[in-house]
Length: 61
Image 1 (cartoon, rainbow, N blue to C red):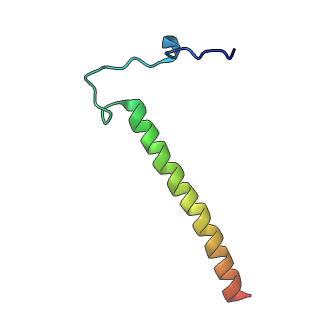
Image 2 (cartoon, one colour; image 1 turned 45 degrees about the vertical axis):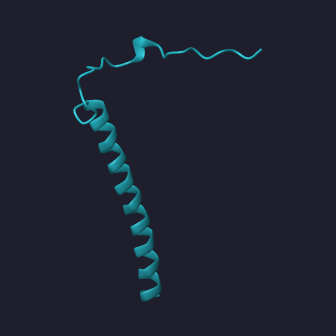
């Protein structure tokens, strides 16, 4: 028989959370949202740089 997963995660690994705190007030959630936006813009920048490079090569070459 397969092992059963535990019902909850290890509480020692969890950050203390105030139940009255909204998601917009939590520092870890704000940091995660910022990181997501940063990664999204970084990906956009890389794609744009590659596209500009190929367009430049087509125009100049």
